Length: 471
Ligand SMILES: Cc1cc2nc3c(=O)[nH]c(=O)nc-3n(C[C@H](O)[C@H](O)[C@H](O)COP(=O)(O)OP(=O)(O)OC[C@H]3O[C@@H](n4cnc5c(N)ncnc54)[C@H](O)[C@@H]3O)c2cc1C
Image 1: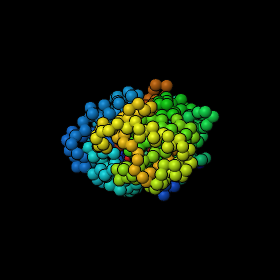
Image 2 (image 1 turned 45 degrees about the vertical axis):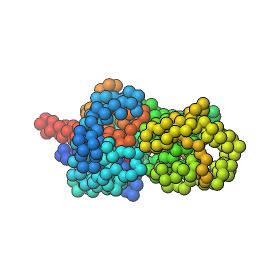
Image 3 (image 1 turned 60 degrees about the horizontal axis):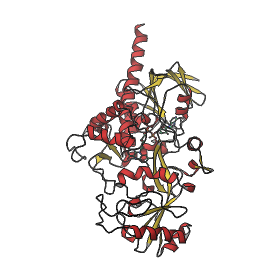
């Protein structure tokens, strides 16, 4: 069965796809959006988001003070260790200054940052109602503008002609169009691929113990297809946004409420009841995204954040209650840890804590001395019962391996941009994020490149149409 009804096909149903579909439609193109998920689960990882990182030179509605382009760029350069394309990064940063007016026109509302949200009021604009409300607004607007939407329509492959897009296949159904935007996310939901990428450490398949914080539909089918079809790759398959989440979280879609934020207030031990990293290295917002990888490096990919009564009320509690016990040996028994070893680890830590003025809002002078690894800030003896612990697992947010694009969001094949195939969102985020993360930049990239890809796809489709008409 073959159809050629549309100027532009957009593949995916998250933020990047919706931004592309809306922009292509605004550009005068007829648009079909193909979302793998059923309607109730539409929206990919974007449905779990809360905010977007925005540059601004002065206070603006929900954003305080200023966050100039240069500071944003330096933040990104630092977290990626320079593994970023400066031109594309700056393009996304600049687009974040003015995208909110466009978002509002499509029904998105913003609110000031929530308390307990990693101190983001200056840099990040929060969506009223979260990512789910943002997507509902975009879907409503897309439907009103005449974008055709199909759910449960996973695209299995594309038909390409030397880098030019021809058609998509949903099962046996072939749907042709003049241009295409691929916005089908990363491959974090594909446990086989994750397994292959991470391999074994000490005989254990590391990724078997990962939990996926978002959608189950980002299987990387089109990423794999495109790389196999000669699209230029960017990024390392083991690089991803990966945080420590509650080990009791579901395999998929646990979302934001499973993140554990108590790490800097206590100690973290592995299944041998040994510490393995400086829990107080820096402010939590600057360190939370390294802890998934740290836990992934521990035996069995499990760890435990242990705190005492003094920490309660000082962090946003996750959805699952902590294990609680009046003594450390009892806590160890509840966690299945060697009680003697946990007591020994805690005693060594407590003895190494030097007196200081505890201040969780500053890089304070409470540090350990003579302990390996050290705890460099907020190190106070854990001595006030009851004791609490959260079990931790690596929680994958999204992967960074992707297709290489340029400033027009065109997918590159052997260094040459496709004339009519574009990519946006997680599938190309690796162009900007080689590693590391700064909160809210995922939505910045998806919004900026989604809009660019939609504009370019419409132009490619309509120019092609105009050229045919003239011929
Ligand atoms: C718990 C959580 C919280 C987060 N919070 C934030 C935040 O506050 N701010 C921020 O900037 N980022 C956040 N992120 C990251 C953010 O979600 C991503 O950067 C962003 O949503 C990527 O958008 P996307 O459209 O590329 O991918 P997604 O939103 O994941 O969309 C991909 C879409 O493609 C569809 N799809 C996949 N394969 C196919 C196929 N073969 N055919 C058809 N459709 C397909 C999927 O069903 C899905 O709809 C968070 C992520 C998670 C998991």
